Length: 141
Image 1 (tube, rainbow, N blue to C red):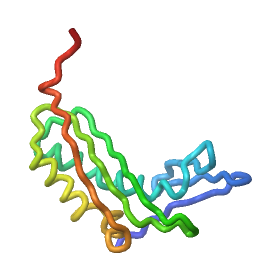
Image 2: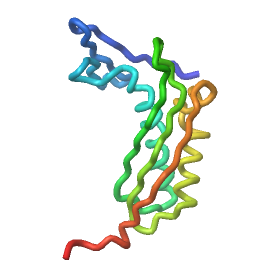
Image 3: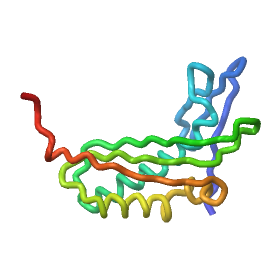
């Protein structure tokens, strides 16, 4: 079993510095830093994206650009529980194959992402993707 430690230090007022297991800092402050609740969908997007890119590289897919949007729904009252997170993957490249992209996302979500595995039984998680084919895009006039 893995044991990992992250840290949080209070700076002042409602400002905190969080550090991941490698010591990388994340500022939590409003309005000048990350909102703690945003870290949940961000963690899901980050966890799956890391694996999606790795799988697409192994499949020899020519990815030029990649972005993810995670849209969430939460209860309107405290504790503002998450009810649904929808993850949208936008992948640009040349000759990308939709079946391979779909398989990469499925593997990332269902097999490799610990955040997804932890959340899937308590939050409805859905996803989709779009492919931007750069082969068919022409440069300016």
